[in-house]
Amino acid sequence: MSSEPQFLSFKGLKQYTPEDGWGQVNAILQSHTQQSAAPAQPTPVPDNVPTLTETLDKPSTHASPVFDPLIHELFEQLRVPPSDDLTQTWRTIAAEVNLLTERMALQRELQERMQKLDQELLNLRSTILSHLSEVQQAADQQLSSARLRAEVSALAQTKLSAKLKP
Image (cartoon, rainbow, N blue to C red; front, side, top):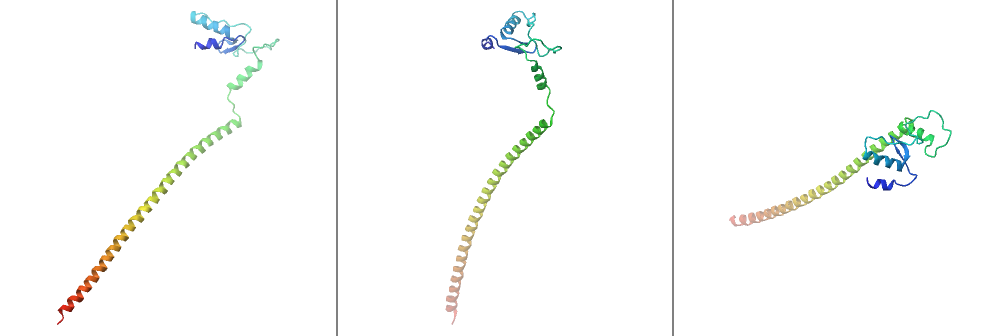
């Protein structure tokens, strides 16, 4: 954090710390350097710098350029979580968007699986048709061989019966 003092060394720059409230950066830097040199000493807070932890018991008669009286209310509103219907509606919408995102991812995954299944089905159909074609060719060849054997057998029978007749 050695670059921090160089960055925060601008005059007039304010910094908020929970212990000290709003204060000049130079004073806060000096207090931090004093703390590092002597840690037992408390950090000095200027009297004219109000903090958010202070309560405003009486209205201020002079306007301070350092502290806006509405900032306390703003921080209080930010600290308290809202409990209106819009918050619940936005939570419901966020949950539904998350569910929609999950379902869309599942849909994409299922579509990819369907495409893979369709491709596998096409490959299986092609393989089955190829095997059926091979079977058909084998059956045609067997049929041709059987016809040829039948013709040869019929011819041999005719020739043999012609020779055996007296």
